[in-house]
Image 1: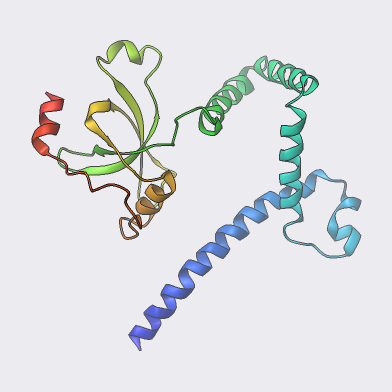
Image 2 (image 1 turned 90 degrees about the vertical axis):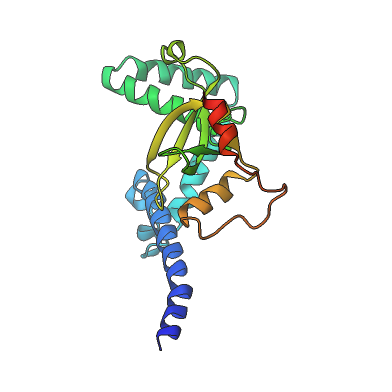
Amino acid sequence: MRKYFITGLLVLVPLAITLWVLNLIIGTMDQSLLLLPEKWRPAALLGFNIPGVGTLLTLLVIFLTGLATRNFVGKKVLQGWELLLKRIPVVNSIYTSVKQVSDTLFSSSGNAFRKAVLVEYPRKGSWTIAFMTGVPGGDVRNHLVGDYIGLYVPTTPNPTSGFFLMVPKADTIELDMSVEQALKYIVSMGVVAPETFDKAPHIIDPAKVEASQS
């Protein structure tokens, strides 16, 4: 009896969580329908709601925005809009910070969250997976001697929270796995390991690590 119950859980729990996440995403994106006049919404035209119409509208708006800002006129309009936002005291700090983060994350030329590494954390001899976010900047750079990199260490099983560390690059080991594989490994708490390895496993020599830190 217990065996059948566990088997049922293993089948239904991933399916239920997947449907819940999809429903949350679609429900959130469907809120874009509120931007339309009430008489243009599916509920008014057809007499009932159609889940996903707002999602299509959101994707269309994103696509058209990207298309419009690729030409000369669109770029000028965008520059004027950003200049206006930067003149508003509170909005300025929020918009600038969010834009810098989004530009870093989604830029095709950036390295943020495109490399998974091993790092000793939270104590010596204990290793975890982290993601490279860049290199230290500002006045921080003036106080760090050597080649340092910024790392985001996600928590398990919720990778949306974590810790930001700046460590010597020599103290990290770059992993031969994609960010998706690393995230899956973290979220599953190590249960779902990457399926294939292109290289032989890297053997961590504690003596070499200690020598690099000294």
